[in-house]
Image (tube, rainbow, N blue to C red):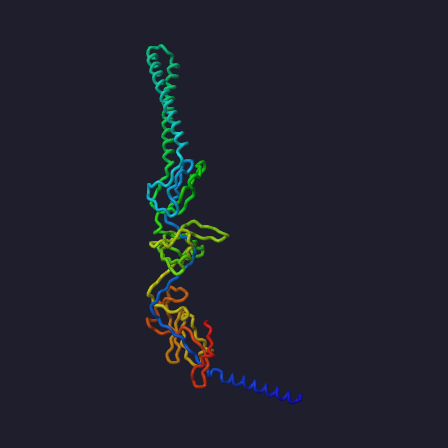
Length: 385
């Protein structure tokens, strides 16, 4: 039994060896090389960089008040449309009116004092001419008169300031626009001791927005004013918005050791879809060429290896940095070409081959079926050099 098993195993081994020898002997006989070709033709080439940004109004104004007080009336709310000079809010005037009355009383007192010192000085001046008073007494009268004049001027300024503060109790809109933020409510106290308290925020024109993009330092060197921009927002994922680069700000921003630069992009918003604060996914076209002669970049990487093509084709190579290959019959010919810009997918062909020339882009190796047709089930994609 063991002897019979050994004989069967030996026969199987001989069959395997015979199969391998047959495969080696037939190698290359049934191989079929199938070329994928393309043409030199006009095309569009562009390079882009991507970034994220935030939609903002072009101009916003924080409307505040320069005096402290209680908000007595508030005439606007979110989304209110306002006009320049329109009353937005009113503060309680009680304390401001009291201050004005006090300053006016000080002015009247200073005016009375001035009238007295003026008459007193006139008397001393007359007596001085008759040598009936000393020079020092005359000088004292003159000094008191001048002090009274200065006190009146100070009191007049205080009254003017009190009137101005009273006018600040009524808050007006400085521009035409839409209220996009509100910081106070009626009855709330605003204090201007340290900073101007904000009443509301007004955007001038929501039909003309802008996008502030954060561009990485590795890409900022390619960004220029006037370049075309497209962007999308999550609120409208199927809509593509267009704009252009308006400004490249020179101020670097470092966040978690990542340096970015702000790029201002115009964002026309006639249909008011873009809202302040939306996050935009931005594509900046740093280079665009339309209608230039070009080929797929893969065609410039094709090189026929002698080990693969040597038995079936005649290879006519050339020494050039950039070349494209054509096929005529069984002759593979290399053509020196001058290339221009590329976007990684297509490459411009400046010279060397004319429009419409058919060139090889890549190839496949398959095995011919017994009927002479290509057996597509055994195709292998050839690796590109």
